[in-house]
Image (cartoon, rainbow, N blue to C red; front, side, top):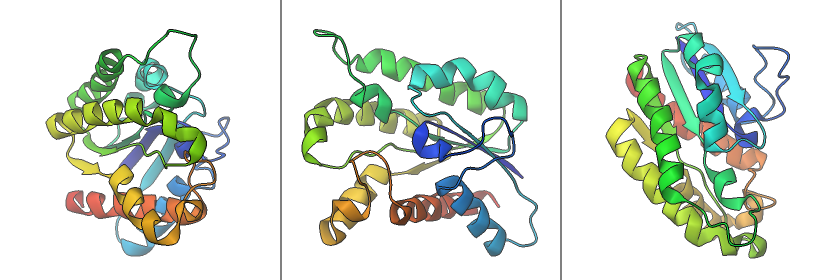
Length: 201
């Protein structure tokens, strides 16, 4: 079974882009190691196609070359936070409809290639310098959830999960900056994706 991850820096996790088989050192690598231990009788190929700084439009542009050409059995998409938190020119608003159009094109093309699709929603922690992005983030998240209901074979509600667990342990246990996950958070991401993947095995 070949599983391809599409995303931004959260997915890239320090991978070596010159090595197509490099998984990085964060949640994708954790996912692969856990998966092999859980299902020793199934041969897995995992590909990390995260690119730091990417917005959804960037992922849409490279979808064919980076993901569909791999002929994956499963595609995991974790994308969207950069579209919300990147700096914009004064007066340039976040366009939720344009964001949704790019996101939908990715999901539609993945499904058309015959792969199972897992949508892992982006997440944003309520740290002081990120609170101003929450309104736009919620608009993006609403679009993602609606599209996941339409296209995805499985949906991982990461923003909801992290909002819950951080109430007890504190945000710092899961993110140093409100966007990027700690190792503890990466384990949680990997575990929740594996739970959804189990239905396809």
